[in-house]
Amino acid sequence: MYRTHTCGELRLSDAGKKVTLAGWVQRSRKMGGMTFIDLRDRYGITQLVFNEEVDAKLCEEANRLGREYVIQVIGEVMERSNKNKNIQTGEIEISVSGLTLLNSSEVPPFTIEDNTDGGDDLRMKYRYLDLRRSCVRKNLELRHQMTMEVRKYLDAQGFLEVETPMLIGSTPEGARDFVVPSRMNPGQFYALPQSPQTLKELLMVAGFDRYFQIVKCFRDEDLRADRQPEFTQIDCEMSFVEQDDIINMFEGMAKYLFKTIRGVELTGPFLRMTWQDAMKYYGSDKPDMRFDMRLVELMDVLKGYGFSVFDNAVYIGGICAEGAAHYTRKQLDQLTEFVKRPQIGAKGLVYARIEADGSVKSSVDKFYSQEVLQKMKEVFHAKPGDLILILSGDDAMKTRKQLCELRLEMGNQLGFRDKNKFALLWVVDFPMFEWSEEEGRLMAMHHPFTHPKKEDISMLDSNPAAVRADAYDMVCNGIEVGGGSIRINDPQLQAKMFDILGFTPERAQEQFGFLINAFNYGAPPHGGLAYGLDRWVSIFAGLDSIRDCIAFPKNNSGRDVMLDAPGTLEQKQLDELNLVIDIKDKK
Ligand code: ASP
Image 1 (tube, protein in one colour):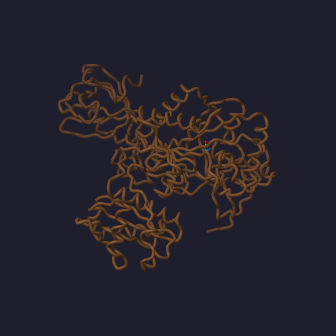
Image 2 (cartoon, rainbow, N blue to C red; image 1 turned 45 degrees about the horizontal axis):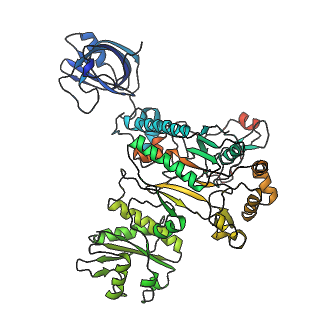
Image 3 (cartoon, rainbow, N blue to C red; image 1 turned 90 degrees about the vertical axis):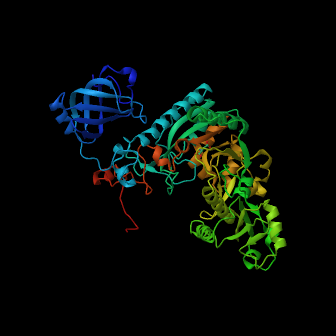
C-alpha cells in the first residue's frame, strides 16, 4: 500500500498511530540534529521529522532529498510542540522511521508556492507544476464542485444530459469557425461547434423536452481576459416554455449555485432591465449593478451657451461620482488620459465639483453661469462633495460606451466593485438585428433562430431595426454569465428571418436545411439558454481571468505554450488531407 492517509488528513486525535504517507517534498529545513520536511499532496501538507540521534543514516538520506522529489515514508503521528495554526495538520508531525524514494525531480523552474516567483509564460509552459500550487488547484476543485451541483440541480428538474458531436458543420453564433479537414471526403471540412444550438433544437423536435450538456464550444475570435478559443458552456434547452419559464428555471439555478458554492442567499427575483434602458443608463448591455452611478443626459441643460464642443455634440452625458470632489488636479488629469486612451477614444473630459457651500466649480466655468451649473447639479441630484464627470460626442452610442468605461473606472477607484458582493440581473428585449458595417447588412444580434417579440412581428417588413427579440442575458457584476432566447418554430417565420438576414432560400437551405426541414415535422415551442461555466467559476473564485480556472488554457495569441500548439503538419499528413499550404502574408 502506497499510503494509509493523505497529507491533509491527520489530526491530534491520530497521535500514536503508525502511518504511511506519500507525496512531494515541498521544502526541507535542517535545524541542529533534526531535519524537517513539508510533504505535500493534493489534500495538504504534513510535517515530517527526522532525528539524527535516533537514526543518523535515515536523516542523511532525508538531507539528500531535493524539492519536488516523490517519497513514501513510514512513521508515527506525534503531537507537535511548535503548532502551526495555518494548516489543518498543524498540530501533528510524523516521526519518520522509514523512507523510500519513489522518484527524483529536477529543480523546478519556479517555486511551488502560492506566492511563486514564476512569471505567467513560465508557469503556462510548466502548467503541470503550476497546478501543484494550492491556489491554482483550488480553482479546479471549485470547478468540479460547480459541475457536480449543476448536474444535481438540472437532474432534479428532469433535464437529460445528451452529448452532441464535435465534428459538425457551421453553427450560427456569428464568430469564425475552427475547421477540421476530412481525409475521407477530400476538399471538405468539418467545423467545430461554436455552440450546440442547432443540435439542441433538433433534440426538442425529437421530444427531449429538457436537455442540458456541459460542453466545449469553439470560436475563432480575438481573445480577451474573459475569452478563450475553446470554452465550456452549460447548454440548456426546454420545450413548451415561454421566456418567464426559462428565466425562472435558470434564476433558480443561479440562486442554488450561490447558496451551495458560496453560501450566499440571493433573495427575491433578479432585476430585469430592458436592453434599451441598459444602454441608456449604463452604456452597456452588461451593466455592473454593484453600484448605481447611472448615465444622465445633459443635452437640454448644456447646449447653446457658446461652448462649441457641447454645442456641436450629438450627445452630452455624465455621471456623478459620490464623494469624489476631493479629486486633485492630477487625478482629474489621469482620468482625462484614461478616457482619451485609444481603446476608449473620448476627446476630452469636463468635470464639475460640488463645493461644501453647494456652489458648482467646473472646468468650463467660462461658458456656464452658476445658474446653469446649479440646474445641472439638480438633474444629477448631486450633493456637496460630489464630482460630476461629463463626456460628449457625435455618436450617442459611442459616447455612452465611453461613459460606461469611465463609470467602471470610477467604480474601481471608489471601491464599489467588491469581489465579494454580487449583483445579478437579466437584460431582456434585445434588438432582433444589428447593422454590420463590415457585411453591409443586418445581422442577427443573438442568432437567426431567435423569436421576435410577438408584438413586434408586424414591423419585420417595415422597420426591422426596431424589432425586439425574446432574448435575454444574465449578467453578474458586469459580466455576461449566460444568455439565450425563445426560438422560432414556425417554418414561415424562419424563412422570413433568413430573407431579412440576406440569405437566399438556397443558401439558407444549404447551411441550415437540416433544421428548416426538421421544423416541418412538428417542432414544439421551445427556448433555452447557455451559461458560461468558465465565467461562473472565475466569479465564484474571485479571479480576474477565466484562464485561472481552466486546467490547460491558451495564451492571448491562442497558443498552448506547453503543448506548443498549433503547429505545422508533416508533408505526408498534408498529402493525405489534400491540403496545400500557401501563406499569402509571409511576415
Ligand atoms: N447558443 C447560444 C449561445 O451560445 C445560447 C442559447 O441561445 O441557448 O450564445
